[in-house]
Image (cartoon, rainbow over the protein chains, first blue to last red):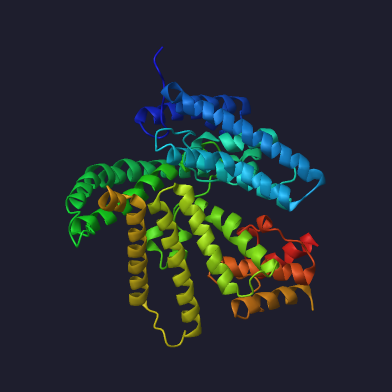
Length: 405
Length: 77
């Protein structure tokens, strides 16, 4: 038997099979029906295509992971019905993060020889932790285990997001759009799909496959430049090229996931909104990888500041927000992976946003003296763009190759 | 003080603007309120109205104008 494995959104064949499989769902929704049994089978087939064949180890890891999170969440929901101790809540969150932590630490400890886990484990963890937190808050009351599995295993977004929220997903899944609304969804889906093709397979290919390798080669050739720091024009070129590649590749991928969701009548939230037009770092994070940064905002930054302010552990609010930014972006760095450059990337953004906040406070106080016109606005976009591209240079890991290999 | 007056007074303190005549103004879209001020808003509402507003109750689209906040507080009471 031939080994069948198709990685999500990677080849024309995948899209062809996907669209064929979607047809019955689309016809159903057009006629106001959701064929739930068909949808479940269709989703399972695509999960098997992604995590089966020669990727079967990932499939096994996925099944164990889902079973573990399922039992953990059910147990916490059951507990929460009658009691609500902070210690148990913290324990449940730690247990929900545990598999991801193990998966991230194993290659680090085993010298990169063993990789556990599966594609998308870091994205699934956002969903499981989020549900535990909302069960604690009482905003998820009627927990539906079947819906929970659908939510976790929703295959269009399983590998790389966008990260949806349980209550939002539930609302879409349980309602069937009327015909005109669904036709609008389809129109958007087709638009997102083609924009995604343009981003990922044309621009992403240009920046990533055609130009990036030679720029990297030139940059690495000049590792002795600038007193051994390897700063060269080629490295600068690499920085901008890599930033463009990162955006178009990931935004394209996100658009595919959103398009397929829309075909299925699920309005998965957007991940990017013209990030390079941001006028400051704070605005950048409202436009870049939005479902991730909003998750961090809602489940880490706001909870952290809420607790610190409520308990009055630190009086100075500005100080609390600065500590919260550091915690927030440091965790984001660790989430990306256990390498110095991901963690430095996190710290860099924490510092950038803290400085940004200081400037915003200064600007508010001295509104009369500081000019604001199209030149200052243009300059702020330019400055933000360069700060961001520099952070992606750190993120890319090329400095590790340049300095330590 | 009515609930509306109380909410407006909290928001005025946080934003440094007078929102008394702008009950349907979007307080997030124009950057008046950031995450930090939002947390302060939740704490102030808890204090002054004796309601419990968990952070995950907070969906920006449902809390983005003074009028919507008044309605939310009334619903939570």
